[in-house]
Length: 121
View 1 (cartoon, one colour):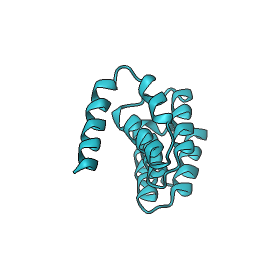
View 2 (cartoon, one colour; view 1 turned 90 degrees about the horizontal axis):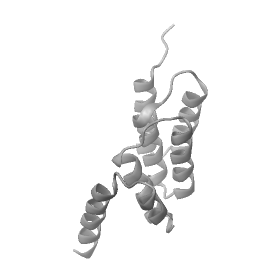
View 3 (tube, rainbow, N blue to C red; view 1 turned 135 degrees about the vertical axis):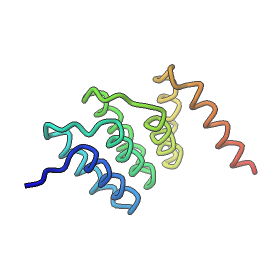
View 4 (spheres, helix red, strand yellow; view 1 turned 45 degrees about the horizontal axis):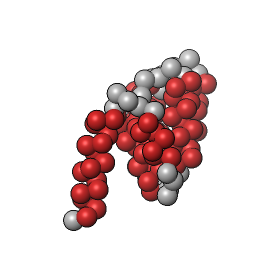
């Protein structure tokens, strides 16, 4: 019997997100969290990105919380996807995210400036 590892599951979560199947992505991520194999940063990022694609900012923020509870390290991609989900969903929670991540602020500020510049063009 072949068992899927975290890398394989993360790839499937990502594929589900890209296909607009965000609920399936979240189900798989939750199954990974419940099992002994942690999804890791890449798996969580894929699920948060899936939520971002459908403007589901509430779920994206819940995943950020679950990520912290699971002791999985967030990165710039994590915060960027969560902020994008908030922006697309019309939530001002992006400001809360920015204040919660002092180590990433300079990177995210630069990303946000670039996005704002792109929108003006």
